[in-house]
Image 1 (cartoon, rainbow, N blue to C red):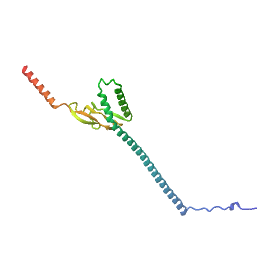
Image 2 (image 1 turned 60 degrees about the vertical axis):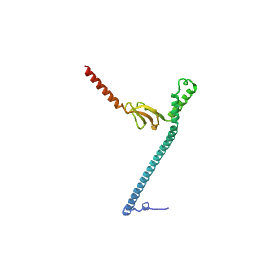
Image 3 (image 1 turned 30 degrees about the vertical axis):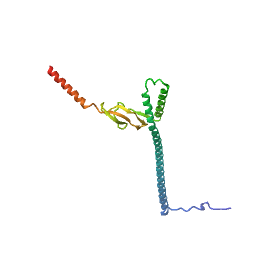
Image 4 (image 1 turned 180 degrees about the vertical axis):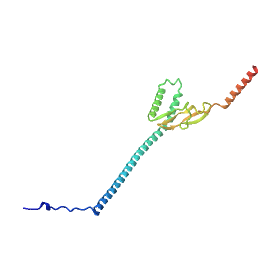
Length: 199
């Protein structure tokens, strides 16, 4: 039998915390701080890359939408003269011809074309009686009328969504002629003179 003294078991040597132990802890803390700084740097770079990617994705989507709108605008701009011609043709139909079915057919085609274009974002710009707005009206003529107001629409203007596709060509009022005002004053003064001489 093996008789050993239990009290004589080997006990690991006690390492006293001295300069060597403190250096190990300090170097571990320093290494931990460096690794945390690296991790924060990696996280910041990753977040920046993610934000850049999201911005790129958003910008690409916006450019794609703008290209689609531009393609639609080009097509609609080329169809507007057709719409104008159909409208003028229907306005000039005499009463004799208005009962024919082919005239009704042309009117139906006009309405379908207009409804299709409106379904894709086309809308008329209101002009008649509105204040002149150089952003959506093009002044072709000035005439007597309420100053700064559109008194006649020569060609319809259209918007595509929120952009002006073609401005309205309009006649703008420039106010009453000064000559008319002078004539009125002269007539009033002549009437007063006659009243004074008669009275």
